[in-house]
Image 1: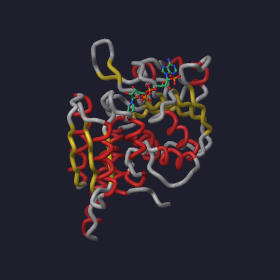
Image 2: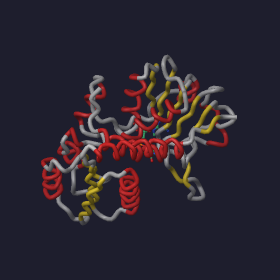
Image 3: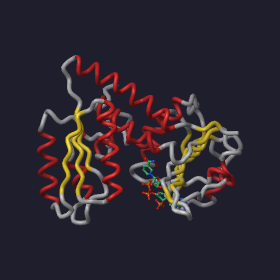
Image 4: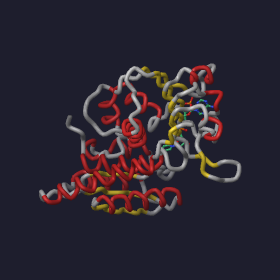
Length: 280
Ligand code: NAP
């Protein structure tokens, strides 16, 4: 039977550590703040923003909320980002994605000052990660590293296969696993014999957005399986990219959906906001 990697518990542990750190910072007269910008009324985005604000409140971070109408122009949004960049009272800036069609997301991400880029999406942050320099790391992959470390799962020298090569999950995940000295293979929709490649993995990380696609036939006996997917099954129930019932008996450890990777993303956003650009 596989160990269930409990993202809810681990994310709570991180938020509690951060809460203590914020109390300490406040005692030193330092304030921690996050500006959250939401454009339009996408219900999923509204829920994400609400959860982020709730986490800020728990940890003791001041959240500054900017809710803009769906018809906001790119110029208006860029002007707001510029103001927040220049405001020393604003620590981190988060622009909830996706943005309405009339706005170029890349231009907005590039406009955020790299030292306030708590989502880690700015090309400067991504570049710093790829050459091993300090910078913000994208929250979901950073959360997966914490899940593995805090579950005492060794990464050094292990075969890690990542399914998916998106800019927010697959690619930064590969760079982080390299940093942990894993041997990394990144796969995608053009990969030949995906099953066989996945079966080589000691650690299999799946981020594709296809409900329950990865079953036991993709998994080596005793592998650690991390499921990033947030999909809906045939009954509309939240599920992952991994078929949990099929894989759990084969894996040595596995993340459930919900309650695995999902809660870690917000915890790491809080981490980035509290600690700022890592200096080590
Ligand atoms: P994405 O941008 O759509 O990228 C999907 C990746 O999977 C692409 O690289 C694609 O390959 C690859 N892929 C798709 N179908 C495939 C197949 N049949 N075989 C092999 N590779 C395949 O998705 P994403 O933003 O990375 O998100 C992936 C999943 O993670 C989604 O379910 C999303 O909801 C979830 N997610 C969860 C969190 C969280 O906090 N838990 C955060 C982010 C994302 P190509 O590049 O060749 O097209």
